[in-house]
Amino acid sequence: MIFLSGLVCFLLILTAEARVGECPQSEFCSETKECLLYDVVCKTNNYEVRHYESATWVYTDESSLFREFALLKAFKRLYGYITGDNMYGKEIDMTTPVVVIKEMKKWWEFWKCDYTMAFLLPTEYQENPPKPYDDKVHIVTVPNATMYVKTFGGWMVQGADDKHAEELCKALYSVNAKFNNEVYISAVYNSPMVFRNRHNEVLLQAYGEPVCADGEGDSSSSSKEDHSWSWTAGS
Ligand SMILES: *[C@@H]1O[C@H](CO)[C@@H](O)[C@H](O)[C@H]1NC(C)=O
Image (cartoon, rainbow, N blue to C red):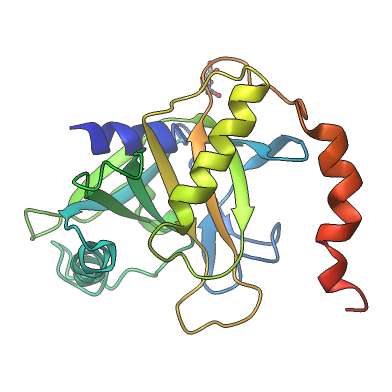
C-alpha cells in the first residue's frame, strides 16, 4: 500500500550498517538515548539535503478524519509493542524521531486521512527485532535514501506539517529538483511536554542526484533574513 511505500521512501535509509546511534551530532535530538543518524549533503536557504542509511522500523497504519485521533491510536499501538507486547516480551527503548508518513494532499482532499506512524528500533534490535503480537504492527527495513528536509518549530498540529511540506515542494519545484511528491514524512523530535525549542521536520525523498540550489526568491529571502530572525535578537 502507498503508505508503506511512503515509509520505504523515507528512509530509503540504512542497509549494511544501520546508522542508529547515540546522538552527539544534533542538539535537537536530546530526549532519547539513540536517534536516527544522517549525513548532511548540503544546505540551502530553503532546505537541507541529507543522506540516511538503511534502518529497521516498527510501524502501524491508522485512518481518521481527525488527525490527532489516528495518531493517538497509532502511537498507543506502537507503544504497546515497545513496552512488551512482542515475542521476546522485551521493553524496547524509545528513539527519536517519531515519524508519520502521509500522502500529499490539497486542502479539498479532506477525505485522505490515512497515516503511517513509525518508531525507529534501537541498535540492539536493528538486526533481530522481536515479532509484534498485534497484527496491525509491522516491522520494515527501509533502504538508504537521500531526503530534502525542512525544519520548523512549535507543535505538529493539524495542517502545520501539510503547510511546511507544501513550502518545501515549492522550493524544490523552483530549482527543478526531482523528488517523490506523493508522500511526505513528518518527523517529531520532542515529547508534547517539552515547551521550548521544539524541533520538527518534513522530509521528501530525492530522486537521483539531489539539487543544492537556492532557487528563486533567493535574493529576497537572504535580504529578508535579518528581519525574519530579529525576534531572536539579544538571545
Ligand atoms: C544506497 O546505497 C547503494 C549501495 O551502497 C548506493 O549505490 C545508492 O546510491 C544509495 N542510494 C542513495 C539514495 O543514496
